[in-house]
Structure formats: structure tokens, C-alpha cells
Length: 350
Image (cartoon, rainbow, N blue to C red):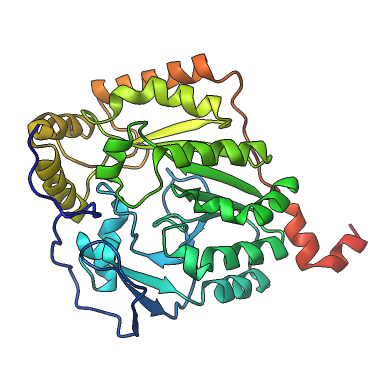
């Protein structure tokens, strides 16, 4: 199969114009060589760190993101649509112009200390990956975990980076008290596809090893097969479920691809350049998931799709889970320890 020349080390192969003027004027930090174009990191003093989750499709009331933009460069990422709000484009800018919320842990501590805060598990992250490559140097996510542990506050972590294993010391303590659940995002066993589709994320092998290691340490770990892309990875559902079950995952769920806003332009351009012979088939099947469109904003349907093909994907996932999971382990995180730590005198009269 012939492919067009692509930008090495990047998912997006174009950079559509952002919708807004550049909003940030902070110092640009250069951390050395990287893929072309070179990645730049921009410090930002955020005003808040915890966001209210408005979507009923997403379990949990709150999320927080220490970074905006993501160097993983996943070609399909829905978060690309948020980058123009920061004054950048949704394509190459999204993965090469990263906003760093340097005061994230400080803001988190302030919020959890507030008398108005009512404990509820927080998603880390809900938008971009909290363990993207720069986290290895900056350790902002680790600082946030330290604050969460100090307050005994429950957290759901979502990542596709094996770097999470660096923080096993904190995660193990939190798991003992039922304060943490990890979701590893993995949608293919084909690392050649992963390299093209998620160029800066951890390899398939590294993610499987991460699942196994977390499970062996008593840390509950689920898998999110997201997104399922017809014509690229939908044929892998059965072997994917079998493999993650054998590595110790408690459960697996899926999301189908949806391309809203500027993310559609980025994905179409990438697909045309990377898999030109599959372009028409893939795009036609994507539109079959969303009533003739490439995406949907309809709650309850936007993540799983509608129609015959979407139902076929759901049937495969249900069958695979019945075959390969002896038991689906559900984990309810503890919300009582937080109150006893924050208000220790209340326990004297409880």
C-alpha cells in the first residue's frame, strides 16, 4: 500500500487555523530536541483546576487536567477541539504547543481544603493525558497524587502511558484504602498501527505490561478500547478483550470514533496520507455510526454510535467479555476517609 510523505513523530499532518487569537503570553520553555515540529511548553498560572463534568456519558462529577494539549499526538483525539480556546490550532499545535498548569497541585490543595468542597471521585485527566511525556520531567501529576493521598481523596486515573508505574508507591497506598482506580486506554494490539495513530504514546507491549503490573500490585485497572475505528481496528475486539483479561484487567469498555469540529479535518488529512487505500471505506463506515455524519453530540449515543454497525461492535464486545472475563469486578471508591481527614473532630462524635 502506498502512503504519502508524513511528518515523523507526529499524529496530525496539518495544522488548521485556530478560532481565536493567541491568548497566552507567558514564557515559552524549551526542553530540548523532539519530533518535528519541535515541542514547546508554556507555563500558565491556572485560576482553577477542577472542572464540573456536564456530560451524563462520563462517569463522575469532576475532572482535572494538569496539561492542555498532548504530545501523544493521537490522530482522533476529541480534545483537539479545545486547543483553539488557548489560542492554538487543533492539529500540529495541539501536540507541539503544550500548556503547563504549573500551579495545579497548589490549586487542588486549596480546593480540597475549602469548606464548600463535597467529596466525589475526580477524573485525572478528562481531556488530555496526565502522563504525557513531559510529566516525566515536571512531575505535576505526581504532585497532584500526593495531595489526593494526603487528603485521602478518591481519584480515577485515565492514561495510555506506562509512566504511571513511576508512581506505584502512591498508588499502592491509595489502593489499600480503596481510593484509586486506573483506566488504561488501549484500542489495538497492532503496534504498527499504534505508531501511526498514537505516535508518542506508550507501545502496545508497554501498556499491556502496565496493566499486568498494576493488577499484580492490587491496583484495580480497567481498559478503555477507545476509539474503535471501523476499517482500522474493529476486527481486533475479540483478541483485544482476551489479551487484557489475561493481563489482569478488571473490565473493558469501548467508545466508537466520533469526529466533531476541527478533529474531523485533522483525522481526514491523516487518514488520506497514511492509509489512502482505506480512506473511503473507513470514512463511510464512520458516518454509518452517526446517522450519516462523522460525529454526534447526542448524549447516550455519541460514544457508542447508532445503527447496524454500531450494534455489531457492541455485540462483539459483549460476547468477548462473556467469554474471557470470569467475573467483571466493579470498584466503588471510598468517599468517607476524606471527611475523617479533613474534619477529624467529627469522628469523635460519629
